[in-house]
Image: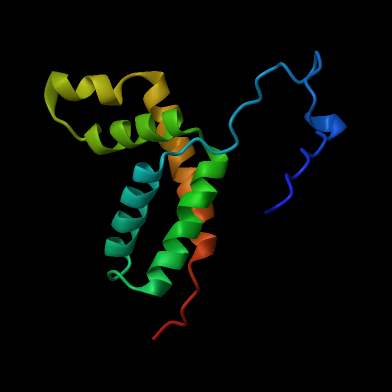
Length: 123
């Protein structure tokens, strides 16, 4: 019969104190589904589903997730995808100052994520 294992004491840093009761912001709040959708789209844009593309695209979404919250990312995608909607309906996506700010942030994050992809020599 196995002996009962004694509970390990908690480390001092794990104990709650007045400073640890503050909620820390999430470092990475992207849901798995959003990551998978992004990786699948990225792989399609880079020549299809293969392990090389998967590794590069996972790296890319990780870099984007490090620069933006998921809320900002999803809003920036909406503004980007709907930007060219014609007429008054498209104004909701083109006109708000937040639209340009978030689209610019997404563009910068995507540019940084390009470091995940190898530089191929020109043919």
